Image 1: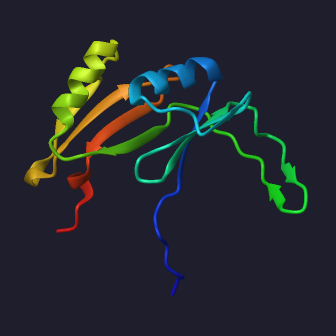
Image 2: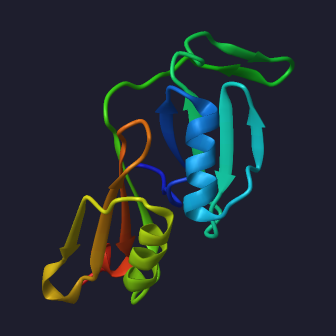
Length: 140
């Protein structure tokens, strides 16, 4: 039997233009970066998890942290999908917010069995973002 998990800690996206991606997420979510440098920007979400933007190709070499260890190389390509939870009943507020910002909603899904809604959009790197009611994955 596996030891217990306590949740998802990070969601990572790989971007071609850090300034463009950072500005998009600052505008959309109203967050200030927790940490930023040329190859990485980190945003803390309200639940304590983080959204990390990595410059595509910027993490292909191991990163040695003296006296602490090594972060293995990683990277990603293609249009990735990520979903961020929004409070139940907030989909209308998010729809209006995105319209004000000129961010197109690619699709909207009203899930069966009253499981809430999802709004899908694309970021400047083509990643498929989803803002989903927390009830979407609620336990039955």
